[in-house]
Image (cartoon, rainbow, N blue to C red):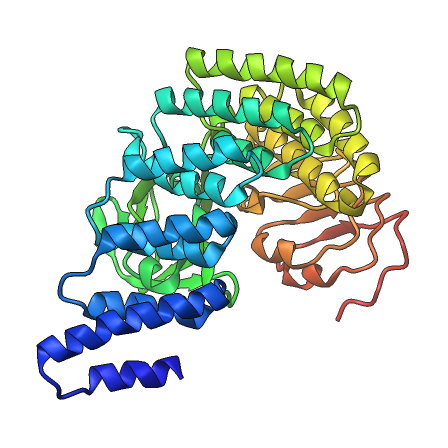
Length: 448
């Protein structure tokens, strides 16, 4: 019925002044409907439609209306969405919106909607000049202090803990080429990216041999819409002798040199702690260390509070994941008991951190990975491991060798002894596999 009313306004042949009066009358009608049902999608959408039709909408009054409805229910996400719509179409200062969230948070630390809205506003009002989608460090340190006050006030409320996690993990990794593999026979180039891209973006990539662009076709390693690993087959064979091959894709570029006698060559990016953690200034590290000590004290007062324990893990990860890894491991084990319904999540989180630490310290150019006795339940960050020829996953807690193994075109030896593996469907995607060891596992299902 709301859409039918939209058509009536859109197709009306009445004078503009009369239509304007009808639209204002519609706003009054919608407001009365919202008082009856403040969480009606149709009402809020209709109000957006009407305001965009009006010649001079009263945006200030719309904000006052939002204030009124959020007094009744400060978690009405329909109203929060509408508030964002009003701000985006008016000249209302976003700084005032941050002040508004301050007011709501001070009255109720449990107002998750206000924390979430704040996370959307801060990168726009206080942007980091060096990196997009982040907030300036000075403001970040202020926010860390604010949220600490919140979770010390009510340690069992999850809203502030979620916001704190956002502060620790702002932004996204930059695009980069993790590895570049070139083969003469067959003539192929395989490029693995940090972030997946779609085929149309990959087809715009440039491959140069000794400085000259060559033509060919890119193909993903699976049928997924977005992939990290792409193989380029040139229309003409890659030449013999000493050659230099470069690949430029999705705004990043790397280069590799093939010696005269080489049939293949692999170039892997060097990884550091900053590969998986944001770099931190001395001032930020000092604040994080203070927060870590405060959370340790809170953990003594609230020993079975999962939010405190999990935040300890996140803080250690942000400060130094290698130095604190043993302690992080023990904390995650305790979380499996404290919050047993989510034990698989905590085990997978440990797996992620264990693989990250190995990648940071590893020489991926060796093309061998020893991941024995890591306690991992799943193999994470496989995009970093594409070039491997030997992989040892023995003495872990893996239950399946599934689709993860779609990305190992050169893997020749795989050991996965003493796990809990019952499914090995992913092994059919290993064209170079020569040696496979699966001793001391569960009942292996037949490879389909």
